[in-house]
Length: 142
Image 1 (tube, rainbow, N blue to C red):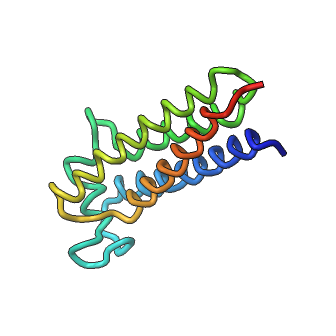
Image 2: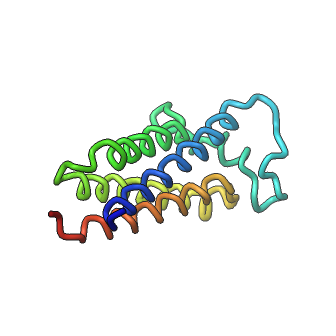
Image 3: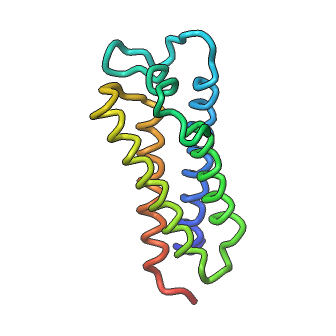
């Protein structure tokens, strides 16, 4: 397996993991009862984050935006590998996702003062995908 193929595969795997994390977050966003999932006192509470006013953007749940973004990254990394522009598109998509995740992390840290383990997991996944996409885009294409 070539280095490019390994990078594409790694990005695909990270994107699938991101879909799973975002799906769990969306499930909890629409939950009607308080859950103990990710409730570790006043510091870590996914319910508080996932049901806050910041959990939607123009009426669309942030977790759904995550699912769509990770799906787009997965599709690019899995089915458009042979296209010459794909590494750059992946890097742009991953950087956009990482920027959005940083914004949400800022909200958690400085506005809500509560952390969500799912959100932090998503941040780590998109950061890793961004690094891999940067490595992929920096490679000379044959």
